[in-house]
Image (cartoon, rainbow, N blue to C red; front, side, top):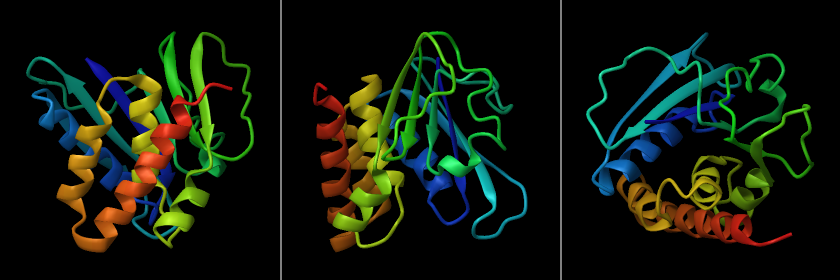
Length: 179
């Protein structure tokens, strides 16, 4: 089972990101579940969402304490949410940032990508969720970019869907670039 924890703030599409991740897994014939954890439900408040992906039926229902991957949609929650806590060895960290992040982590794959900038350029709004899912597909190889795109199409129709797809593709390509 592959477990993902997504940290961000209300209004950034954290819960929607977990839902799209689980949809992408379903499109690949896998089992998946997505669920949020809220504090105060308001824009800007810290939000955590979870997604599990498996080849077998998932019976767990508790929050993910030992994720295989952590997606950070907003850097300001890293320390306050203890976002990297429990990350498994050889896990993945994907951070929405144009700066390198170094918290002394070892034996993890870490990728920083300017997801908000890509979202503003392609979508016109600072909502990084679809961008980060494109990058997640490239970083982890757990899901195909085509499945992520299908999930985006399912969640967003018309022009906004196409803009989110374009942004996700850019992030996927940048994540695969060497260097």
